[in-house]
Length: 243
Image (cartoon, rainbow, N blue to C red; front, side, top):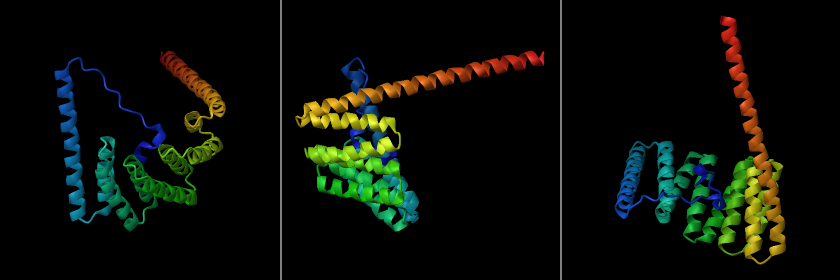
């Protein structure tokens, strides 16, 4: 979802720690299920109250959050129902940002339901809006989602086309994180489609981007250590002057 910066190829699977026994695992699953049902029930109450009070902005927030919960647990049809309502309300409110979010959410859920035509339509509309509004971050998100949808359809030519557009945008924004992900995605698509030599070029670029990210991280850590040293020194000097 947009709230998660939901670029489809960047999704991360949940990691579960081994609970040690089947009984303990069952208890954990029951707790998670109860927590989920509790969240859903709470959002439904919020949405009903907002609807009765004709507070569309609050209803939008409620259906957005409920749709995200449904999406995370794989209840894509329920998520789509929420996101369709979100889109309708966003248009009534004339809120472009919320409308873009709804299009992104609806496209993602539709893709997982294998309704690729609808997913592509949502992502293209969102891209057009983001481009016209000059929102580069949102533009990158929709380009990535379009590429991911085409990749799921095994339309590798279009997948590469949109990943390349995303890569060009990332480089213009000096977004090393997005550039790294794009190189990995293009390399993977080329590899799957049998273009091994070309895929190697992107994997090599991926290595360069990763090294750059590590360098930036080390520079940040080094800078922060200097900040800590300066703070300690200042504190010590202040203590000396007080005496």
